[in-house]
Image (cartoon, rainbow, N blue to C red):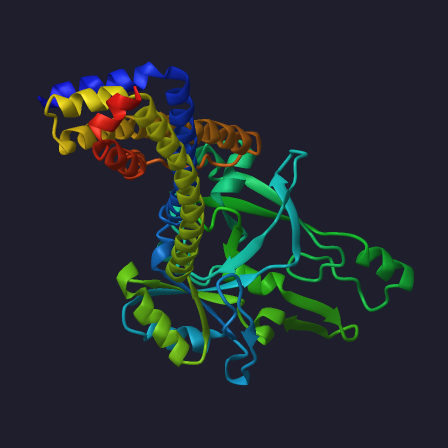
Length: 446
């Protein structure tokens, strides 16, 4: 019998009991859709993280901290006290710059004194998550527009994170040169504050501690999307001035305390010459006694986490496929029982057992193929719907769109192929039972 004849007869058997076949195919399609949907979510989550880190080459950076992180598992670390590395200063910057494969070193410090900011002469204000950054901004702070800071600059200049730039609603080029107004925390005593004289009354001091200072700055750059997009950056020289508290000791002596110099930098960002050398740089930092965090390391942890999630979700999907495959077993056993006479006639006419077995295995494979294709298409459709909802949600929050679910063709094809495999395995026993049927007994029973 020709191959086409096998397919034609198997298709006829599927059509003979349409409701039973429909229910079996539906169960397989649901299971396959679960496989595709769960798989696309885990794959898409990893791709979303990689795409978020890639625009500013964060995978080649290492962030140095003053304390090491102890073993804390996948989702968090504990800090280890270390007096030797309790402060990150200019000496630390020089030390880190000598590490092989380090292209640039940029100290960073949080500026807590800034509260809110907005374009001058506008009412909308945004929380100022501000960092002072060193002069090596060209390689550690990629820009989509404008320029980096001049070395040791104390000018009132800012580089806007890309997210802030979108919130301000202007084109990146149009924002360059604009003036923003920065509102400090209440009782601010840094650069630009009108420090009260020694002769100030207690009432004046109380009023001062309840008031904020307004500072002006010029936008000179806009960052790219990525890990730096949610920050406002100022030159490190200005950050020193902002973080310098001023107090009158007497009528002639104004005391200035540079908290940034006293406490050190918050972190130091190293740029490796390539992502492949990040582990080498991170190991060197660790050997010097400093803490280190790299986006590449975080990505590796995420990969391990997604692998675990994939195994767990895959196990659930396999259980669902096994349950659906039991439906194929039931369907095929019923088909064998209903076609006892037909099988007996085939055997009486000389049809070999392999031919009978092959026919029923092909019947089961067609059910698996239909369920796999429909399920894969359904899973792909679900990922597209989820993408649209995510895009709409992010657009409503004015956040850049991220394609979270990703259903690659290999996943769709693999899901369909696995369903066919399960169908063949499920049809093996009914096919074996049909092939071993005694034609004489079957005809006598008929």
